[in-house]
Image (cartoon, rainbow, N blue to C red; front, side, top):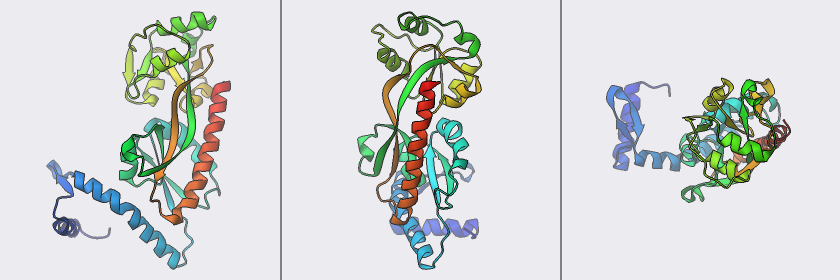
Length: 282
């Protein structure tokens, strides 16, 4: 902001005094965190402030394209999005993409993202704050490191119970993907808990590629590992999990940004469809 820390602190204190409540919690080592009131205030003023900035650029006749803020989970951002951003070229009229990490509607609104990729459906609490459109339905197939995958052969009637009786790896959130897969694959019995669970899908697939067990390969997430030969799918068809990714944007997105966000959304939708088709055919 090109001002001293003490000057910024005085401005924050003045704002808190005017509003009559604290916006930050001040912890050890001068660490700051927003209070509930601070989060509410940030969410309310972020859109109008960005609209003011865009309007100023337009009035000055500046043609500089805005920076679009795109939010996704860490695994989706690093494994699927980041390698593809170079393909955008002139599609967005010279816009730069700032990639943010987050998984929830609250994080999307808090960080001021223009567009977020979220696992649907949304909680009702954010239904009026976000405009959404489908991205891709999630399909899954068991995968393993090649030496382990070669031990599986036969019909689905043989393979499904064999898979469910093997050492299975899972992700903590959502933690019910294996039961969803089992039901979609026609299994009607109990599904034992997974042997290990991981914080992110990226960690899950790295453990799977290291030979620690079977994982559910998901469209968009496992495609690059299958292409590189680090993972191999078992001879089973991919099944729909009854879940999907969707694109979400703030309902009050400034008008100047909407065409850029719409073009970005169209590109993401087409790219996700291609990726899902490659995954289904791999």
